[in-house]
Image 1: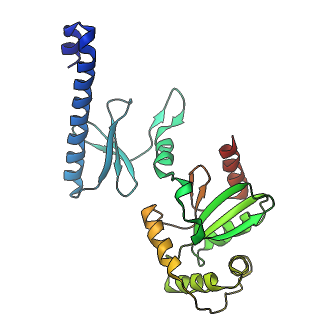
Image 2: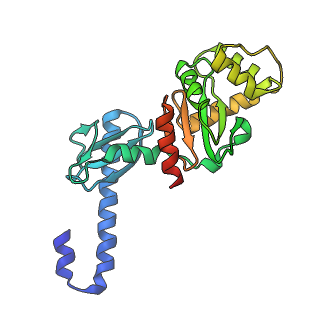
Image 3: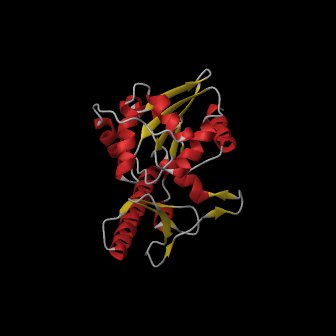
Length: 242
């Protein structure tokens, strides 16, 4: 293919060759997709792209996982790709890109809002009230200043999680009810109101591929999956503001 384009020797043919090469690459990506899905036995591939590393292809699965293979899908690598020149974890960088969201698209009216200090820094969390790591996170967030928190009630652990989420949402002071339970173990009083927002949060979480709690999102769309100490959150927020 390369020698064919070279033999043309005409600048006018450069665009044609570029398009030809692009079509060739696309054909290879389609072949890789088909081979991987044949191996998996299901239409599980979200995207395929060639990497600049040793002829490997990046395969993003619909589950959110990322693996690598060659153009014949003769093997599959499930692991980290490290650039030895830059020492950069290429896989983690790519996963961060893939898991990021458009923060402005979040329906913040479906979340419990808390403003601390000037509230300039913004964090959205998806949390289950019976999640142990969410309770640890709540204690970390309670120590932070100048931040606006949006807590999306996301009960995925048990029926009791749903009940507690509904009672917290129906409380006169949702923020207080949430903090009383998460920080002090004071269960929310039984209340009734329109709790359809909980179902909408669950649908939203599925759309965003949130499989566990807590999950945090920063204003630039960065996702932090799982519990993180305050120092780590502060560092991430500082990177957003740069």
